[in-house]
Every structure is written in C-alpha cells, then in structure tokens.
Amino acid sequence: MLSWILAIVTAFVALAVVLRDKPQQYNLPPGPQGLSFFGLIGSMLPTDRPWIAFTQWAKSYGDIISFHIMGRRIILISSAEAINELFNKNSLNFVNKPPRIMASLCDFTETLPFMDNGPQFRKCRKQFHHELNSAAIAKHTAVIESEVQSLLQNIARQPSKFEDDLYFAIGKTLLRLTLGYNVSDKNDRLLTYAESVSTNAAIAMMPGVFLVDRMPFLRHMPSWLPGGGFKKVAAQWRQELYELVDKTFKSLEQQKGLDDAQEHLMASMLRSGDFDDDPDAQRNIKFSAVTIYAAGILTIQSFLLSFCLAMTHFPLVQREAQAEIDSIVGRKRLPTLADKENLPYVQCLMKELMRWNPVVPLLSRKPSEDFKYGQYDIPSSATIIANAWAITRDPELFPDPDKFEPKRFMPCDSGGKKHEIPDPTFWTFGFGRRVCPGQDLAESFTFVAVVQLLATFDIRPVMDEEGRPKLPKIIYTTEAASRPMSFDCDIRLRPDANGFFTA
Ligand code: HEM
Image (cartoon, rainbow, N blue to C red; front, side):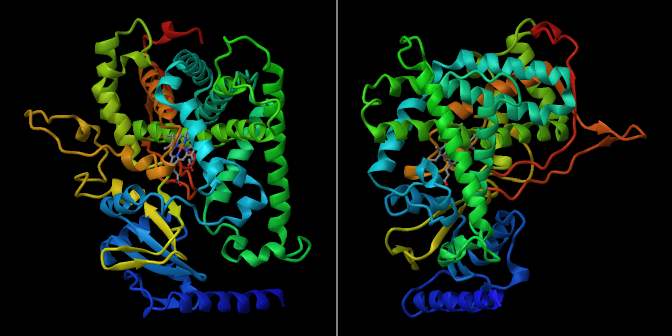
C-alpha cells in the first residue's frame, strides 16, 4: 500500500517539475532521451561511478546537458569554460549546495561543507582560511613529517595492512594538528568517532542515496512506518556527531589556560578570548575541529591509495621518481617537504595522480537565481552537477588522457619545447567560493607521504602461484570522495632503507 502511495506521489512531484520547467518557459540544454514522468528510465541511470557515463553523454550532447531524474531537473556541466563561467565568474549565484534533507536531520548542516551562503558560512570560511592557509600549515611541517615516519614504521612491520595504516596515520595526524590530541592506538575513542562521522557525512553528501533527499515530504514520516528507517539512521548519525563534538570540546577545555606554545590549529581560536562567554563562538570552534577531520580523512586516504595503486601498475614511473629522490637527497636520510622544489618529477607525479582519478569527481550546486549560459537557461530550481572527472580526462587539455604520464606536467619536453598544460588542481580542489580550504594541508601531507614512501619502499603487484604478477583492478568506489576498491600489493623495504628508522 505504502509503495503505491509513494509511487503516486512521486509521479505527481515529477510531473510538477516537468511542468514547472516547461520548455516554452526555459530554453534548456539538450540531454539524453528516454524521459518519462520519473525522468531517465532505469537502464539509462548510471549508478556505478556516474561520472564515467556522464563524460560519454557530454561527448554525445555537449558540455552542458539537461535531464531529470525522479522529479529533479539536473544540469550537467562538463567543460572547463562552463565551470569557470558559472562557479568562478558567477560564484555568488552558484555558492549553495542542493538541499540535503538527510544531512540536516543529522545536523551535518552545522558543518561548513553542508552550509548555505550567509553570515555563518562566511565566518566559517574566514576561520578556516585563517587556520589552514599556507603560512599557518607551514608551522606544522615537523608534526606531519613525524607522523609520516610512524606510518612508514607501521607499514614496514606489516605491509599487507597498508590501507588501515594509511587511514590511521591520516586520522591521527589530523587530530594532533587540530587539537594537539595524541591518539594512542587504532581503537582510540575520539579517532573511532572521527572516522565514523567522516564516513556518515560522505554518504549523506551523495545526492539521492536517501529517498528523503529526492522527496523531502518523507521527513515527516514516522520512523516506525516501513520506509521510515532513514530516521533511525539519522538519529544514530546525529548522536555520533554530537559524541565527537563533545569529546572535541572536552579535549579543548582541558587545554584552556595552557601557554602560547600550544600551536595546534584550534589554539589561536582558543586564545581569541570570546570562547567563554559567546555560545556561537563555542559552537563554531567545536564544529570547525570536527569538520577538519571529517573533510580530511577520506580525501587524503583516497589520494594515497591512488598513489599505491598507480605504483603497482606503473613500475617505470616509480623507478623514475625513486631515481630522482636518490640523486637529489641521497640514501642517508629521508626526503622532506623542504626538498620539494628540487624534485620536479615527484611534483609532476603528484599532479598526475590528482588528474588520473580526482578524489571528488562530481560537485553539485543549487543556483540562487535563474541564469543564462550562452543560448541556454539554467533554472534556479535545477541541481547543477560539475563533472571534474570529465575535465581531467579531456584530451584537449590533457592529450592521451587515459595514459598515466607524469611527464606531461614537466615545464618542457626533452627537446626543450614548452608544455602548455593546465594544473589539474584548478578543478580537483573545487571552485569559486567553495574551493577546498584544506588544500595546503592536503598537499603538504600527501607530498611528504608520497616522497617518503618512495624513498623507503618498492610497491609491486603480488605474484600468483605461477609467479606471474597479479595486477589489481583499477576500480574506484561510487562515493563523494571516491577511492580505489580495496586491493593487494607487495610492499617491501628498499635494500638500504633500514637506516631511515628502527622498524
Ligand atoms: C587530497 C585531499 C583533498 C581533496 C582532493 C579535497 C577536495 C575538495 C573539494 C573538491 C572540495 C569542494 C567540494 C564542493 O564544492 O562540493 C572540498 C571542500 C572542502 N574541503 Fe577538501 N579536499 C582535500 C582535503 C581536505 C582537508 C585535509 C581538509 C581539512 C583540513 C579539507 C577541508 C574541506 C572543507 C571544510 C571543504 C568544504 C568547503 C565549503 O564547502 O565551503 N579538505 N575539498
């Protein structure tokens, strides 16, 4: 019975959207055929890594496409020009995210990635910029380098657990940088809460995972009715968020009154003085801390897993990067962030990793007002999806885009001819008013991790019974921060790497 009611209501909602966006009112961009009142019919709906199918659609229909799914009008943007025009030049109109009902039921909307434009959003962005700008992050290089060295030791001890070790190292570093909190082991309560809140928030960020995001009226449904299970999930996730916030708060409280040597990211906010008397300031500081680990853990992990996967597949690239490190740094010490300028090939490798599989392939927005792009209308009721993956695989920008080739980013080719190639991080760290505020921290941590892993280990495919290499499949998850599916690789200490640490 309930499913019938839902189907009928959905049909009405879909019909309402079709009528609201009626062609005579808007000159909508072209899009895939197969529309019904519900939108694209089942077989056409890409559910597995939709950015790949969307890139194909762009080849057939153009850089700006329109279609509707379950009553929601989608405008898909797949070119660098269109992204620049909308998200950078008209950033005020494209600053808000589409409403996420599930996220608001969990109170994730208290954190920056889910906030709409307004005084609170601007205050938060300012705070993040203040805490995470390159000069602020530079003060934490020693912490980053020491945490990466613990990571190397853990991997050396049990290489098959490298995925867990990466996750642990990132969570531990973010908690230490943000709060000055020292995680003791993998079962640490604060770390466990941080990990689970990150995962929950990433799921809530994905459009359409929960039916309530497509049909907001369902939020009024009692949790005991069939289909109301999302409410129980929301209650659980909300509780985990507040557990994390409370634990963060307690950790900050314990540090109040400590001297100025406390240089974790929250320290300057704690010293700002209004923390005691201003409930808003208290809330901001607590949610800012939570946001840093929630937004940082999965994204950095995804990048470093891509690195391990790429090294397993492309041994020549690995050898070339190792040869550069060995010749510049030698084998007597580990490379550090200070070596970055002298390691151009490793810098190119970092860019190629970002381009090869962007961590956040799709970004979505909700326009504040109707907008005209070229001959087409973009209604304010639409959800805009920018396909960053399509841009990093655009052969006009990156020739032979499916090839993993760091050298494409070298300033000149072997004949001295200059390369005209854009920096993929223009797209992979977001755009306009919502560009990633953690970019400097992410780039510092990932550089140190990549360069030290290369100096210390060889990463190879595992062998099958007949001694043939078993290359892992290059498959990524369908998540807001997409990462390689779990895979095996053979990580071994390089012959003279023992001296870098006591394993
Ligand atoms: C390799 C690592 C990372 C990548 C590729 C990455 C990428 C991105 C992208 C593409 C966005 C924009 C999302 C959108 O507009 O929908 C974003 C937003 C954000 N990132 Fe990152 N990020 C990374 C690491 C980090 C770290 C380490 C932090 C925290 C220290 C962080 C904090 C944030 C926050 C708070 C936002 C939301 C900004 C807003 O909505 O205004 N990110 N990130």
